[in-house]
Length: 256
Ligand code: NAD
Image 1: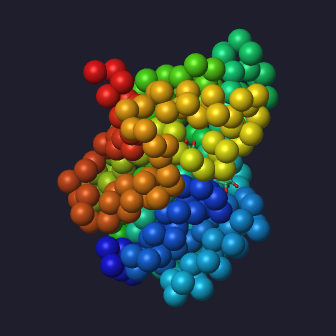
Image 2: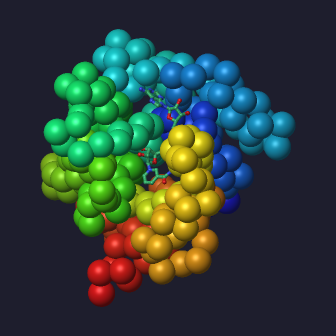
């Protein structure tokens, strides 16, 4: 029970890594607030947690929308009185070299992946500052460090999240708030399944994904959820402003 009684918000927890983290956090005793713009998927995660004996509540919110995020945070505070953990996980992918990206697509990915970290943090942080306690986990990607072909907009967003994490940590350390980032490699979630389904040759696409890392397996949502659990829990109390790589050796192994 590494998160016993902790009030945790996980954005984008209707699917993939967020969903897996919500299930694990609940198993470890947390009260999990499932946040997603997709009502069906968000409710599904909450029901799954409750039927396994855990505690969860679903609140619909779009992380790019100020009113929606502010209302969600107010609802959590009214219900629980505090927020111990914020996992800014919601994100979308973007494909293309810079010159191929349309301005609307650029704005959309920046909005979900960067503003979608800024807004929930903006409304949660004051409560953590008051309590002088909190752990914020921001979802970056190892692409922020090593780049990847045809992912210019996505890489830009994840680099921004990493820089934001470090800067937030400097500002909020005095309030006993820790801010760390997770940098996954390729994780087999609907996010990646969608990309594979659009590929002409999915087998070759999987082989290509594997060739970018040292591990022969693709990462699983549970692999990232366990890292998030560590950062959410007091076990990581000496980690501040750190990037945590969960990438099967993609970042350092391949570049060594
Ligand atoms: P996913 O598509 O399976 O899940 C993302 C969830 O976020 C969905 O439930 C979706 O409804 C929700 N969401 C999207 N936009 C939202 C918004 N504006 N407001 C609220 N909810 C929103 O994706 P995933 O693979 O689990 O990815 C989760 C995070 O991990 C993303 O930030 C992604 O960039 C990052 N990541 C994923 C991988 C990977 O290989 N899967 C690798 C590195 C980083």
